[in-house]
Length: 125
Image (cartoon, rainbow, N blue to C red; front, side, top):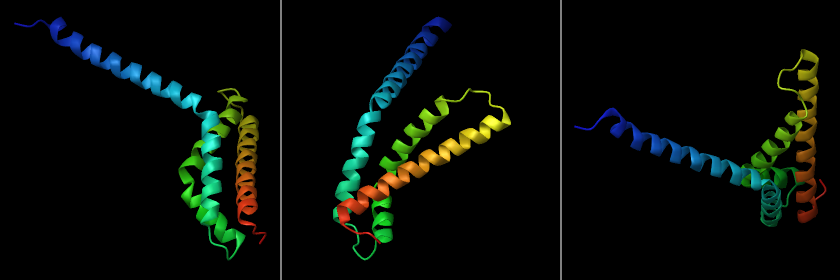
């Protein structure tokens, strides 16, 4: 009859293997940070080619919806960099400052996206 150790060791091995895969995937995502910016740029460029030409706003809406996943990945990376500048336990004033910094970074990304789309579509309004 199998002992408790005989039943537990295979499970423990499976859990450790899963943890190793998770760590490898996390490390791979961290290495993707520069590539995520490149992927976003490529998506914006290719999406701009098929964007509506009636107005810049409609082109931006169309391309942003096409590139949503890449935008969110880049936004998450940039907000993580902002968050890293603040301590884990924030005073209320620091929390407000961090939120302002996060908002400013989001606006900066949105402005970059709009400029790329405008440059590739030739639209100004």
